[in-house]
Each structure stands twice: as structure tokens, then as C-alpha cells.
Amino acid sequence: MKRIEAIALAARAAEEQNALLISNIGYPSRELYSVCDRPENFYMLGSMGMASSIGLGLALARPERRVIVLDGDGSVLMNLGTLATIALYGPKNYLLVILDNCSYGSTGSQPTCTCYCTDLAAVARAAGVGMVKEANDPQSLAPALKGQGVVVTKVEAGNAPVPIIDLEPEEMIKRFIQSALPAEPS
Image (cartoon, rainbow, N blue to C red; front, side, top):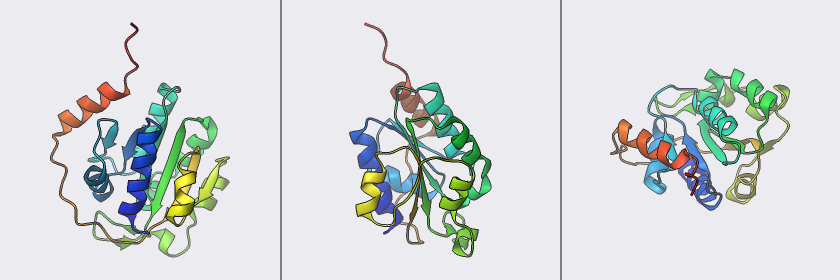
């Protein structure tokens, strides 16, 4: 499965679940923007390794709101401590989807440790995450996107030929904040 196909499935699930969707830096954010731009999407433009933590903080701050995070294997490897924190708090409204293409796709496709020996599903389980699934095709990924915890999905290496995001960072954050805020009492 191509990463952009997995991202499209996650975007569709986020729309159906009225979820906030946080996307990893670089090409994954560009791919999400190209398949399904919406104010409820937060496109990371920097801070590699922090999408899972930002999403976790948002899920804890807004327990009534569903939060889905798209992160890459390289970013999760850069911030492994996030798996222990996800395990500790285990919010039912939070799902981390690790798109494992065995490479640092946005910086030249250098191989990550998952290409050789590291199993991120096993690492998540060892960190104490109670709900860990592996989904390596659209048929297994689609139902996994309804759950909580961590889903690790193997995707092909390579970036889709998508344009850069043509929104200014200030515009992205403003519209995301507006969509993430609780509704005003009537």
C-alpha cells in the first residue's frame, strides 16, 4: 500500500468521525493536504517527532473530541518516549497511526531502523500501550482507524508527487484552533 493511500483512508475516517487529524512533517502533510484539506487537519511544518505528542496533548485537553495522528517511523523513532506517555494516559479518544515506510521519506529516503531490526508494534507493546494493531493493507487498516491506541501500518517507500501546501502557517493554525475549540454555549 502506498502511504498516500493509507493517508486517504485515515482522512476519510477522520471526516466520518469528526476527528481532529494531526499529520507528521514533510511529505505526509503535503499528501494529506492534497487528498483531503479541511480545517480540522493540523499540518506539521517542523518539530520532527512531535506529532504524536501534540495529538496526545490535544486528546487529553479535549476528551470529548476524537484525535487521530499520522506519524512516520522516523519521527516515532526520534521520540520513543511518546509511546510510554501514550501508554500511561491511554486516552480512549486518541489513535496514533504510524506509517512505517522504513525510511526518512522527507529528507532523502535514508533507511530507518525499522528497515533492519526495529518492530514499532513490539516497541509500543513493550512501552505498555494496551491497544496495538498492525494493518498492512486497506482491508485491515480501515477498521483499525476506528480504534484507539497505536496502529502500525507498513507502507511503500516513496513520496507522492504532490505540491507544497499553499496555506500560510498563521492561516493553518487559526483555522485549526477554530475547529478544535469547543462550541460556544447557546
